[in-house]
Length: 114
Length: 114
Image 1: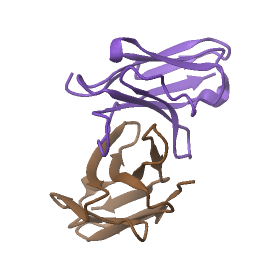
Image 2: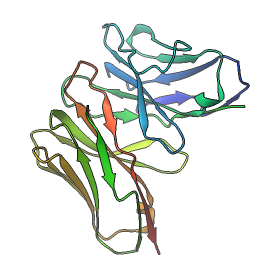
Image 3: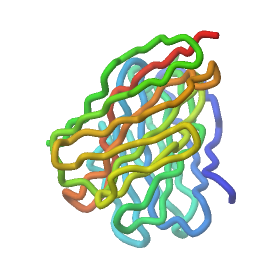
């Protein structure tokens, strides 16, 4: 596609429920990142996919968080048993990968856990 | 550990002023530095990408410089307009490790008053 597409744009969920956030990167971009932006805080790296390599999950805050990238394209970030501290904007970005490639971000999913 | 700092945290100027936003980083081992704009409730828009081998990039009224040895970048906005009001984020892409993640500053919140 022309840009990075994320869905849903907004999600309100009850504490304890599972949620899935979707990211459709730019076609041909081999690198895909998930970041989280909490209120009043900087962006926080969550997970990185590059081609067919094993993902770098070093930024995931707990084992309730997981992500997949199917067929090297669409990615899904899953949060199980959501907590109020999971409320944030979840941003997905893709790039061509390699050295020095710039990022293109989606518009994000605003998650509110009540 | 790479840390990115942006100064000032907030800036309010009258329309038409030229202004400078500052970004500093602690580790000069970077692939690139990228300036983004974030409007309230929206995702990130890439403004300028400076590769580690470059000194500056220009786009319209925006000019970004990079001094890798001193760990500094500036974003210069000429003839500011109310439509420039947004949060400006600086991010460096580290070449340490394999995940090429972005390390972010907390941003400068800019208000341009008509």
